[in-house]
Length: 234
Image (cartoon, rainbow, N blue to C red; front, side, top):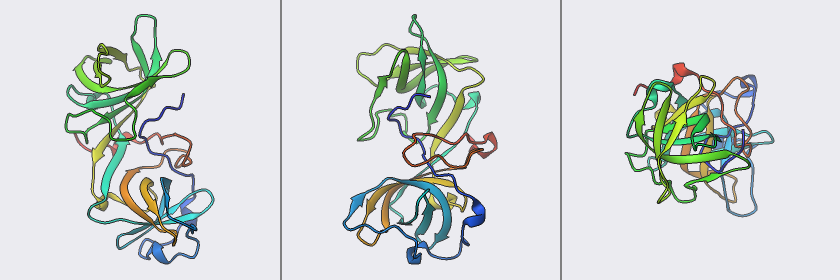
């Protein structure tokens, strides 16, 4: 899949057998990554421990201590199906555009956290055209049929686009969540600032279940193939 700058969950492959218990606080872990000066995250990995307002996130080369609070924005990515593609929802699509302008999707993420305003958050692009006929499309779903839908791109002046969704396409959904959804073994992506102590103060957490190969590496742009059984109800 062509890599685009869209918000998806990137995590690290890790064996659960190596994780500690969920009752201890990661803030005291001797393996936490330290930094000489405050730096910007993101951090992506698998949750190894959960404490009171803290996480220990395992990346491929180190363990990262993360602190969160009631003000931390929490989102949850989970598996979805064609039935979750509904008119009025925001959507991100990657796929291939044919000569008629129709896009065949290889990934569809329906975003139920946007309250109908599909303008991307600061730092996230409105969509782009990649190499060849590859596209990264962001917008609002205006109509739906059995195996396709029409999306109005967020880019001003762009015409509506028909998107075909083959059975092999990966469909996920993004929902608002709370810290009660955090659990040992899940993948998590953390946006925040890492201080000199090595602890990342989280502004946002995006959680998802691991796929067959665990959690993708932090900079891979990958997303675990989530299970439909993990999908919240619409």
